[in-house]
Image 1: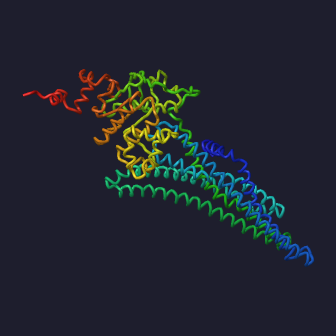
Image 2: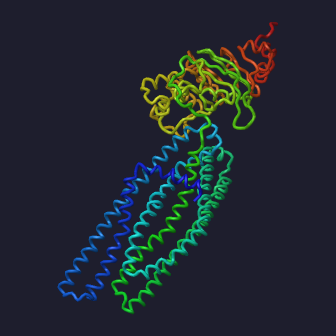
Image 3: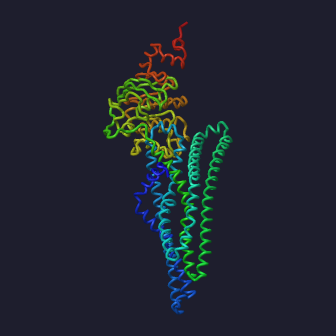
Length: 598
């Protein structure tokens, strides 16, 4: 086993530590399950020699009494076996389910800590595959893998010791098949492991594609690409099928070879045992005992192919799980950061530059400051860095150079939770979750009262349309809120932000995709929400930002101008160029607004 695999396995088994006593019960009951059949083997041998053949010369009454005792023993063992099988099954289910729960919870928490850049660069379906599918596959490692190996070692040891007491020569003959097993598994195991890795990876790729296409089903249907997507899905499914078939073939070679070796060993023992029995060195009862106990010794060997298959598939999943655990968040909370909360909402960018990964600088030496309560708009052409700029405030990304300050303190000196709950963001691409409208609003503040929820909806101009719905605030909305119109979703997003009651409010293209009526409702709501808060408005349509205190103009990642709307127009710079691109030449606009008298 490679160092990486060993490390991943040890980390996985670390999750079994809290359940070590239950696992001990699993091992003990499992060992009992596979060693209890050794007793009936001894009983049947005694029946053959002492009751049926009467080799010891017992009286008929004694033979009948012994028969009842031995028969009672067989029944008692059968009852005991049923009990230990039940206990083992229950404890196994509890432990594997508990470990899967613990790993899934830890992985989910870790995935939420990973930076926005990581999530934007990874297919959602691939991450979902690790969180759901891989962890489910890994559950077999404890039950079908590690625990079974321990059980088989104990039960095999008992069986071996019992065989040696019956006839050591036949025992050596029984073990003669083991070297062939070792050669077989050394040759085929690497192939089985590689195919298992490929199966898990292909499932991840398929999950990513399915989630992506289903989330964009409107595009698929509007372009009538259902047939093409079905063909592509069939290609991925065909690749997965081929991998599963290849893995099944390798596993069946191992399994059928195991069965063949066991059959050969059993046949040799019967032949040689019969020869010994003919010579009088072994009784019929001894032969029965030996062959039945030998079957219990060979059972772990036969099961080894199954355990090996489980181990290889589980390890492929476990490695992928802990590879995701090993991803270090790009944005991390500083150790021992003081538990402080932004108060007034003052904001400053001081010589800030930023790049994504190793790419070119997206923002270059940006410096500006906002007083608490000031309303500022950020404008510029697409790709100028407007949205990137505001993601640095709640630390969705960290600056490459410079510093962002809130109330005079570096944002990195605030705890994540305190910082982010003081900043409200309303984005162009509104994200709502499956559930009721009330649940979506309360997502911002789970202890919000009914009065708080209604007041926030009223401020956001959402209360009226909510009450017109069949079930009002209890109306279920679909994934991403797609059962609502764009304007309704945006107003709910605004109401959700109002419940958060942030000191800093960021509105990123909040009205760009809405019709005029919805835009007017949103703008009216925004005016009420912005009162008393530091606000940053990103807008492509300059008509929505003319009334702010100041406008910041970005061009190719640089802050090229800032000031009130009228001053920037009068300066005749880049802002005026953007303005005339949308409204036409300023002189023509003035002429239309102030026509000459006849």
